Picture 1 (cartoon, rainbow over the protein chains, first blue to last red):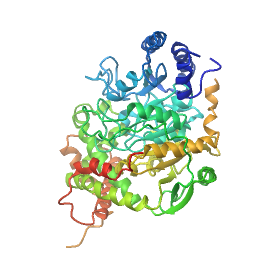
Picture 2 (picture 1 turned 135 degrees about the vertical axis):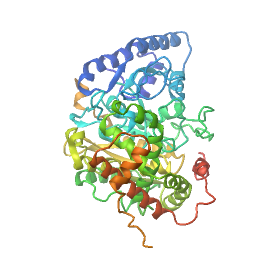
Picture 3 (picture 1 turned 60 degrees about the vertical axis):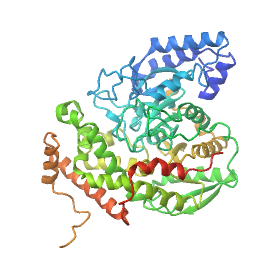
Picture 4 (picture 1 turned 90 degrees about the vertical axis):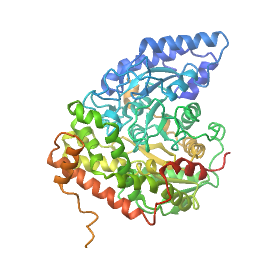
Length: 471
Length: 74
């Protein structure tokens, strides 16, 4: 289709108006997957038959005058970690190859109930543990802006598939930046909601305390639509908040006049690549021109927050994997095995102390930062997108340094549980995307989406498709 | 008694012993060293952040604290 809608919301509108059928859109996406997946390796499993059947059912329902929901007939795809008894969910691993979950993940069920058509399972870092998108078992996912570069991780396929126009939206998970990093390097938006905003029932766990599930898409409006579908309380997940879900699309166009955007004077911009800085400055200038007020802020404990996150994530991950680490160590890649093993060196009292500190440090962060601004702005990644070669398992100490840099600006907000969104703001000197991270107080997703929408209204970067998308 | 340097890593032998205690197969020397350094950094961060007793705090209060600190509904 040469005239296929370019965004999820416009696709939903075209479907609702009868200008296109779900079968047409789904076939278009499947044809693109067939053309590009050999280059990008976004999809681990393409569920063509099931997707076309769901699309046909969506078209039949519309013909009968029955609207399924706000995603009626829209093709989307899910990271390979959301359980469904009818589908294999391998979590990007060898250990769980062929696994079928006992229940449908709540987010998958909500997407289906809203009418979405699931195209299949997306590539990811093995067990979501790593920020580069390498995968020994399934091969690395590649960046559609340049396949020699990383697609990020762990939601590598989720970021690359949306960027390459293989799906209108995707779901990923974020334990230390795994939605925002891939969103940034692939030039799309990604939202890690507040801890508790989106149910995790039926999703693969990595760290019970720091896991978040959220959407990736090409516009703020698309993210708002997806979040509105998946958010909300869930009896199957005791950590899901009962707080009402607002209409995330309602306030998207209200602008940023008078809104205070905080620019950290410490930590987040330290050592940022000059080219990345230039892009971020331009994006912030765009927001200032739209009426936002840029204010300097000092952020408490930023370096400690990343380490505190580590003190929680690794013991929890090691505990979740303990049985398989003992019984099937050879089924893990050496890199993921080594990272999981990190958890054994964190003493239990230290782990619990890091957990107990969380409410106190959260309150301190919110009181200190959001007294002076409404939204905090940081780089998503302070470095240019690295190549696959520079971050491969054979990269030695330099590789570990790059990996640490990839999570530096994002992991603190998994510890704090506050919402954070990455919006693409243009290419670096290598032609790879740069991401601006917006961070809000708890449950301020609507505000973050509003700022991203204001930026996208006054810029056109999100309308640029990566070169591979033209194939 | 002198305080231990908060950034001094665990010995790799200690990490190897902990891994063995957890039933993991032997880890190579670079991995042991990296784990030791990471654990030391995490421990230092916890110590630096813990200004006061946490005796009356429980982790389960985290979601409630997020909700308390939320912006008012639109």
